[in-house]
Length: 125
Image (cartoon, rainbow, N blue to C red; front, side, top):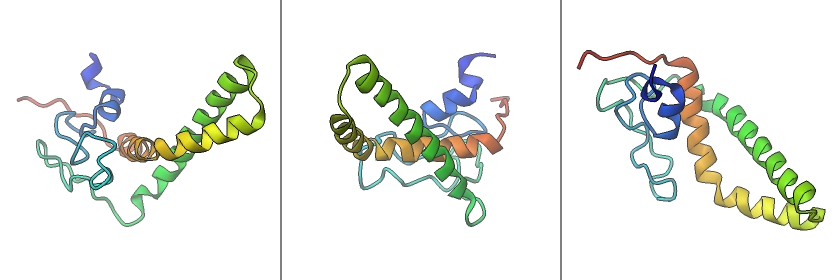
C-alpha cells in the first residue's frame, strides 16, 4: 500500500475518501473565508455523494473537539513546560491560535469524519 491509498492522504490533501482523486472541498485554501466551508456535493471523479443524511456531520464536532484539545495540550506542553511561560500568556496564545486555526480544524474534522465511514476503492482507470 502506498501513501496515496491511505486515509491520511485523503484527509491531508482534501481528496474524496472513495477514490482519493476528486476534491472534497471546493477550494484547497483554508483561508478563503468565502468558500472555506463549501463542500462539493459529489466527487467530480467517482460521483461519491458527500451530502449524507441530516445531522451526519454532527459527529465531526467530536473530531474537532479532539483536535482542539490535542492542540491545547501540545501548546501547554510547549509554553508551560518547555518554555516555562505563565498561565495568562498561554491562554492568550491559545485563544488567538484557535481563532486563526478555526478553518483548518473545521475542514480537518469534516473530512476525517467522512473518512471514518467511506472506504477507499481502487479504480481501474
